[in-house]
Image (cartoon, rainbow, N blue to C red; front, side, top):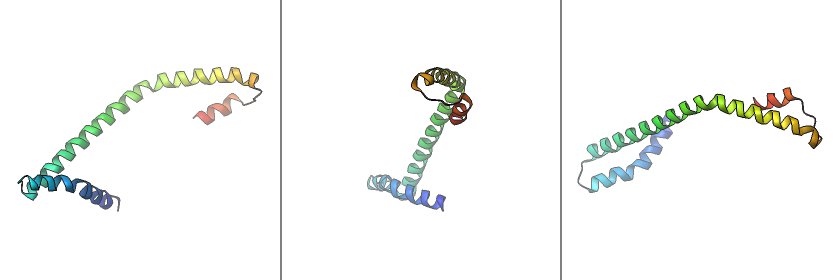
Amino acid sequence: IVQLLLALFFAIVLNPLVTWFIRRGIKRPVAITIVVMVMLVVLTALVGVLAASLSEFSTMLPKYNKELTRKIIDLQEMLPFLNLHISPERMLRRMD
């Protein structure tokens, strides 16, 4: 059902582009091919950007983990001044 709904969505969204090409004198099968190819190029570019972003995030993850641990330690030092009593283990479990 998901593929059918996705295909229907793209058909509705991309139909104006096909119609635009048809008005310019391009035959319908060629217009559909052009629109599908452009859509595939755009989706490939988006996947590439997403993959690069995920790769960068995975390389930065140890740094984020160290920073978060340092902030948790700072927070634990401030908790007695705020009259809050939360165990460090419980706080770390919530962060995980």
